[in-house]
Structure formats: C-alpha cells, structure tokens
Length: 272
Ligand code: MN
Image (cartoon, rainbow, N blue to C red; front, top):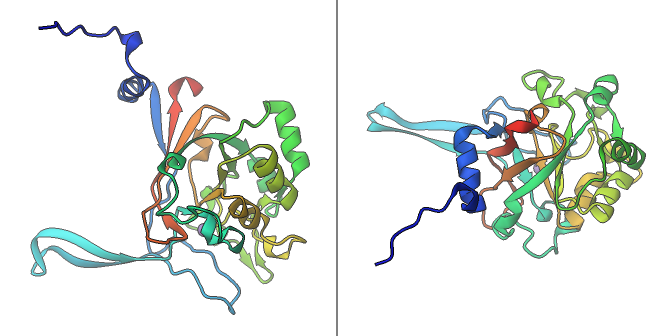
C-alpha cells in the first residue's frame, strides 16, 4: 500500500486553486444579469417587422389545488429577451458559420476573459455616442493593447436606466443609445480578435445604427465572423479593465439564434 501524500498547496491544480479562491473570497462572483420579468423592456423594431416578445410567466401551481406540494411556472419569451446571448446565426452574415447556433457553439466559448472599456462619461454627454476606431486606439494608448480572445465589454452605465423609459430611449426618430461604428467593429474583430461585444444596452448596435452608412455593424460584423453578442448586462462598473472572466452559457436551444441566460463574472478581489 502506498501512503497518500497530501500535496502542498502550491501544487494543487489550477482548478482547485480557483475553487479555493472562490471560497476564500479572493475571487468574487459578480452577477452581470438583469432580472427577467414581464416588465423588462425588449427591443422594438419598425412596425413592418416581427417583434420580440417580452417575458411571460404563468403559475401552474403554488402549493395549491393544481399542485399541493410544489410551485412552478410556465414561461415564454423571445430568444433575445432580457439579458441574453446572440449567436452567429442571429444575423444573415452569420447564417453559414459552422456551429453558429446556441446548441452547437463549443462550450469552451462560454468562458472568456473580458476587457472593460468605459464609455460612461461619453454616453452621459451624448446618448448617441459612437465608439470609433480612433476612440479605441486612444483607449489603447492609455490602457494598453487589447489582447486577443477577450469579450469587449462596453461599460456605458446604461443599466442604471433600467426601469425607466430612457433605457430603450425611444423617440419619434427611433431609439437613442451608444454603440460602435463599422470601423470600430472591424478593428475589434479583425485586428484584435475579440470573442464578442458585451453591452448594457438592449442591442450590441447603437440605437440609431440602422441608419448608419453600414447599417447595424455590430451584428453584421460580429456574427459574420462567428463572434458573439451579450446584451442587457448590468454591474459592468464592478469589473476591472482587465483580469475578469465572463461566464456566459446560453440555453441549448436546438437551432437557436440566442438565449436569455445568467451571466456572471469572476473578478480577482485584488483588482478592487
Ligand atoms: Mn439579441
């Protein structure tokens, strides 16, 4: 018989080390998810198009005659309701991307580090603030080069508008909210190899992006390159610029274009 020798702490595997740091609080878990409820706003498209259904919930039983010892609900929604994930197949540019639906995306892609770009001052000053390539290059000059295979999280503080009409910010001429232009998206996808774009607004594109010279560039360029979107996030102000890891694991809907999900971030406490 061989005696079991307990490995010294330094030798534990990386995963065990992570679990220990989660238990000790050295790694914090930040919830980036808004509450899914019937009053959470959904994107509104021009009336000639089909519309995104809000969340609905009907109680089947709650310890009553329909189920004396159990509580459960029937729920329904669009794949793009609430805090949600956009798969490549969501957009026509991504229709032929291999593994482009939520059931087929490699699960390794559900865990990636994040780079948080703060556009909150700009978005407060201009609700149609456009993230350009020049803005990103200036950001890199101050904060360092954007590393490959990261979520690019745009912290706009837009989540603070949840519960008010200014979240969708619909006006006579459509929605007004910040987002990237096409050159910024090509830079992030082609030159910085981002995993996807993660935003607090209801879409990865700016509110007025359907009117851009290249319409809806975030959707078109991200998904055409097999990249992902995350929308309606909150608490991005709790993440450091670098060092956090986003866990975003969509429902495994057969052939699905996206899905509501619980998005969390792992953040080293030392980053506080
Ligand atoms: Mn979507």
